[in-house]
Length: 428
Image: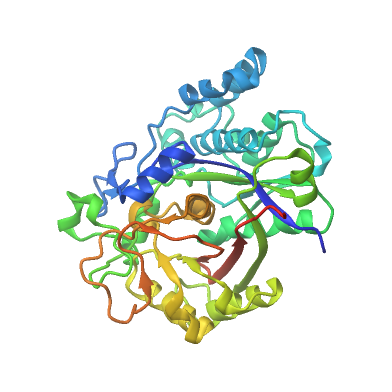
């Protein structure tokens, strides 16, 4: 377990942008991607707002890659796009974007030496919800390909087909920690020498009205009436008046690669993955635990041979729930002790909403863009900072060079997973 692992390609589609440049620009400007849902019917649900991209035209966006793919391959992929699910289409799009961003072409290298790891579970929830409605009404008219398209394993399968890859290919589910769990497996594939590269994809969770209703029942999402017509103000991590998260569509893919391979190809390196650590609360309920979050962070620092004082920035999980935000801050303060005051922290969900299983990857892309350009994005919607959150929360765009980024993710089911990524500097 001695190979160094770097990130050489990124792609994302989320409420703030579908290009790296557009996404970063909107992050830095403090733009909210929250709006009222129109792609699903929430007439029976108190929460009617979130990051709705259900009407995103992935087929038209695929045309961006026509020159890189060639006419015949573009036509074949377009055909796949037309018949597959929303989650698969957007996931494929980000995987293609990241693959090309890494300076790769389809067919490059040994196909058995690249893994395809997809973060999440229940990915096609709304597609299945609509299938059930169709079955109850006129069962003979359900989608003829539902037996293939509805299952989660179709998504790594279709990405592997598009990129012509034959290495390990599967789904890793751990609720909101899924993206970091997939990153952990990709990191280990390369560290161990099993693979040279890994495609780590977080497709969008195709959330259904029933999913959002279930979250209102447990008081997890924003249901306050005053925010239903002001969705851009509703996601407010760290604020005294925070009252829950907002579901959001979003996807991202990272291309991991051994450092030797990246240097041999002479490709740009976004950052080096020093480690990814995971643990559990031994409690299936959505109740975050300070001690268990703290332990995962400490183990990550130990595995990575990093002292707390070397970490300069934390990209927080911070969903905007009253308990969750405080538990994370308490864990950070316990881990970093006297060095906690020198950390810069921000909460991307204040603008993105909660992109669910993909959120660790979407937010890691945002963190790496901040690392690249040397400027931190604000945390918006903080009118009154919770007095217990007494760390350096970035409230306005700030020039700052990230050297080491801690990315936290804590999922329902008591699943915790954190990553540590270092700015890569070319040896002189």
